[in-house]
Amino acid sequence: MKKVIFGNHEDNTLRQFDNCLSHGNVAGGVLCADGHYGYSQPVGGVVAYKNQISPSGVGFDIGCGNKAIKTDLKFHDIKNSIPLIMDDIQRAIPFGVGESIGIHKNHAIFEDPLWDVFLNIGQHEHDDLISTARSQLGTAGAGNHYIDILVDEKTDDVWIGNHFGSRGFGHKTATGFMNIALNNKFSDTLPNQSMEAAPLLFDLPSEVGTMYFDAMTLAGKYAQAGRNLTLEKVLNILGGKSLLEVHNHHNYAWKETHFGKEYVVVRKGATPAFPGQLGFVGGSMGDISVILQGIDSEKSRDAFFSTIHGAGRIMSRTQAAGRMNWKTKERRGGLVTQKQMDQALKNYGVELRGGGLDESPFVYRKLRDVLQAHEGTIDIVNVLKPVGVSMA
Image (cartoon, helix red, strand yellow):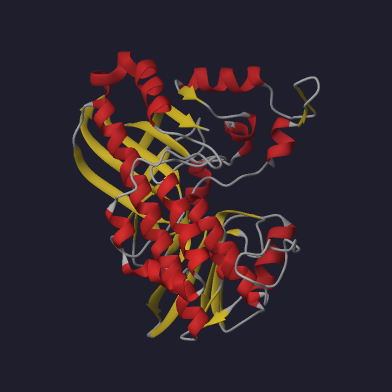
């Protein structure tokens, strides 16, 4: 069995990774340098299965990923308008859990025949999922999901980028299939499980495994459609044109050939990086982002051509922001203050809309350090500095 670990990790992350590799028809696994403790499979974890797929490995935000667009603009074209541009972005694109706008109900994604997979579960489930999807297409999520305006450090080219997934539709889909794996009804409330619960697995090509793979594929298409729509809005706000687009999922499973055999490679918080393949990876709101490219090497082959999806969290949300006293409207016990966060962003030159202490630059590793751990598997094509960040 291939087992590759990049960077340094806490014991609970390593234990969780080993737990994943001990269940199912596993051919190998990778833990990327941005990895951290997650549900069942660590974020930054990659597991290659023979004829199996893991809905808990893909996770709840199916198809979560990144997209970046290189525009025809230079920084001097927008430099003096950044505050107004960020105001426009925040007004144009809803962020947050459950946000909906319902203005893209007739999008081509809803003509995809893969929607019929949910009819095999039930008419009610099909109608509920498609209703949720229609209402939320074109909205961004909460937490670490964002829309950025970025500037190439060498050329001053303006880039735009985003990070979010399949919204409520993907979450309901993941929950439903995990319920099925636990012999519950699709629409049941998912029972609480240990963070180190054994991976839930479907055989391929069993009926339920094929249904999940099709549903996951649809959620990935939906997530990409949402990322396309939001960046189209940002491009219109800027008044620019697209010169190059880079897109990648990082919560997903792919059928791939490695070492002459076909495997299902489940990546949770990890980016595919095949030779020549471009990927967009963001750091924190006060750190660089990059366009990277996979290369062919023994090291990258052993890693199932996988790399990081971000900088990697080193502080929990509660550690960073503390706990809210809803009576006094005060937060207590956090390690990061608003003053610290504001000063860090001012020093870095970032115009922020939304965002909280739990997403401050202090809660993440430095992206350059994480990238260094993967040296010999990727090349850095562009280094991008954020000048505007919009979040929930």
